[in-house]
Length: 269
Image (tube, rainbow, N blue to C red; front, side, top):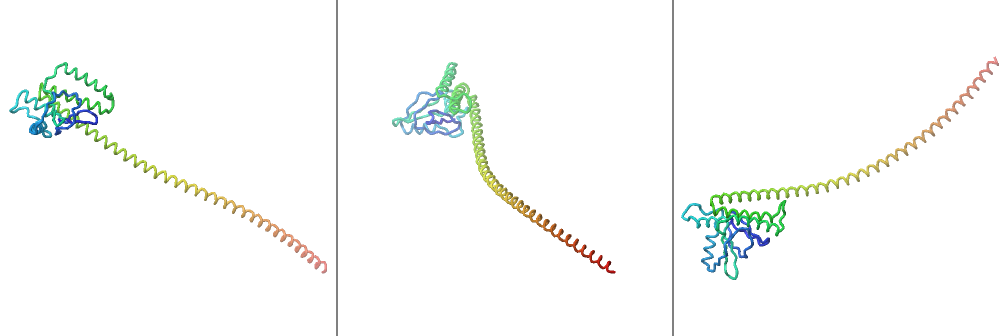
């Protein structure tokens, strides 16, 4: 892992296998234990520090080789937690991770520092909290350092566990971001569809009102036509009744005249 300095939050985080050139900023507080800073003033010393203190991406110092003992442990520690550096007044200061074995008291102090930092930086106890995540990452790096000093193989295995956990978290974060983006697209599409549906509803309601107005007008016209037809039929029936009465009266008169005429002829004979 490499040291990634975050000046915005004033913290120090480690990322496995990340190559890191000296960051020209003052060292920041971290739960990982480092040795005292050493000054590097010559150009050759700087180049040597950059070539040996910062390794290529994805490489770790070999467990077996020419170096043994404390030197091998320091190489492995520098591979897992590379030195951090800053420049002040033209002098490059470098801090290597401490190779001092940890005691039970150191572990207790680490726990107390972790609790104090969580409280001082007001980390949330539940939910997603970048501050809590960062402090626990530093604590895990310090535990890896302590374990690596006693057993390099165990430390490298813990490094793999740490990197796998970080990759899983990054994958979940990517999935979360993509799901949020998908949800936003769906929400925007829903809002657009809602606006279109509301516009169509308003149009249909207007058309419904217009049709209802036309229906009312047609009903009124039908009632007026029916009323006029009823009056006309009533007048025709009345006129027809008068004509029938007149015809009947005329017929009766003609019948009486005919009978009178026939009676007169009969009497004449």
